[in-house]
Image (cartoon, rainbow, N blue to C red):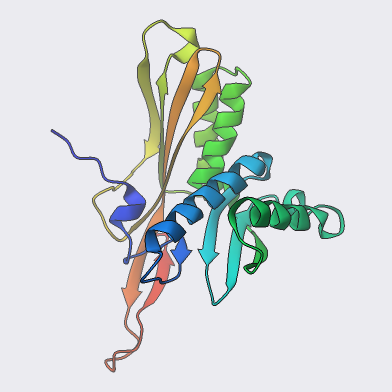
Length: 228
């Protein structure tokens, strides 16, 4: 029986890090649940902004939210009105009045190498009733043109309205899931259609990351990405 492990979790502490960067010895479960609901709320609100990831930091009395997006202009809005509206929505729905919310918007330099952004574009296309095979091929072509080493997509559900659900995969290049130094981006989600939910998974192999020590005095290791 196979055991499937999330590629990001598998590489935590090696070439991946946590999306929540804070420490708490009292309200850990409460704050973690709050992080999950805030992320879900922001992603639903910014569906068309191609959000890659949301990092949350909690310094004393503050909440810092870093949003990485391929379309930061849609989030910022005219004269920053979009950011202010998002701040108010997060404050009213999840936080008390004492907590100060800071929003930082950062642009993703290579959106076609992000599994989350590719996933969101596939979900929008499937919900527009585009043929699923064309959606899969277009996603792989975008990733290939962006310079990835390999990619794989999988779609599951009642494809094209079939009575029996099935899964279909499409990929190219290599996906070394067991190699810990491999930089593999992974995302999963689902599209809501009139035939039910269509599950989508995306894997993107972006090369390898090697750690080189600067000297023997215990200086922090430095990660260098290579395209070899």
